[in-house]
Length: 78
Image (cartoon, rainbow, N blue to C red; front, side):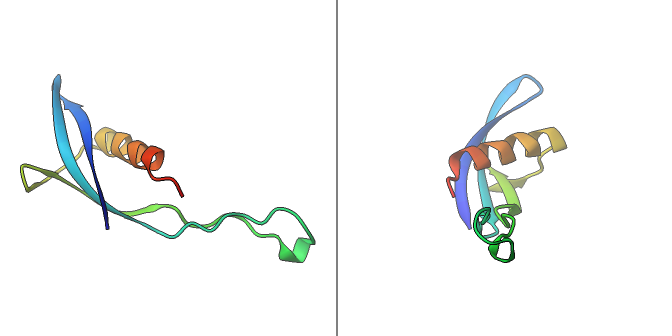
């Protein structure tokens, strides 16, 4: 599990939440060489994501979830 903090906006208020998440391993694509040795990229998706506010689980809206996932993909360099 990994962790980070994210700031979300709800009802015009900025809220900082702690986020724990796990990622599937990322395997880059092989796009050159003989066709039988080529394959697409796999993995790198967020498996589990849990937000906490003041140590308690915090339910994210779908829009907030997308924003948090975008932030995770931005900071987590494969």
